[in-house]
Image (tube, rainbow, N blue to C red; front, side, top):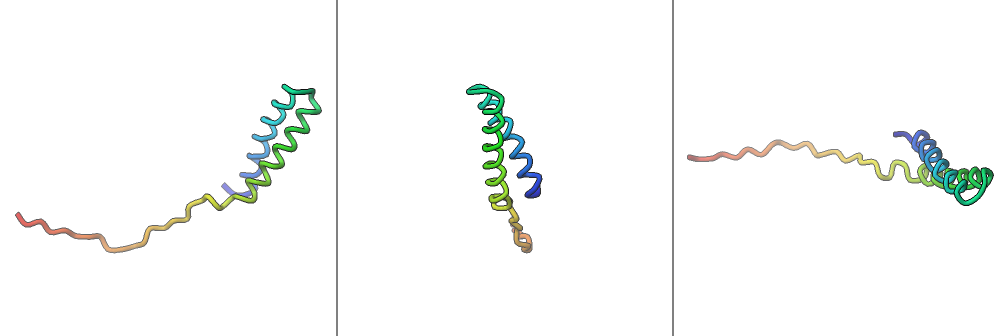
Length: 71
């Protein structure tokens, strides 16, 4: 997933969580503010950390090991 898509998805998810928590504790305005803050923090963290956890590990190419078994 690229950086922008990851940041947007994280913002939306965190916004809904913050909005629901804000609505439980207060009114609609509190939910919107809490959602915006949580969404912004989550999106910024996602943007900053994207690419750090992706694995670009490439196995070295080597010849297979052949084992001879004498019966």
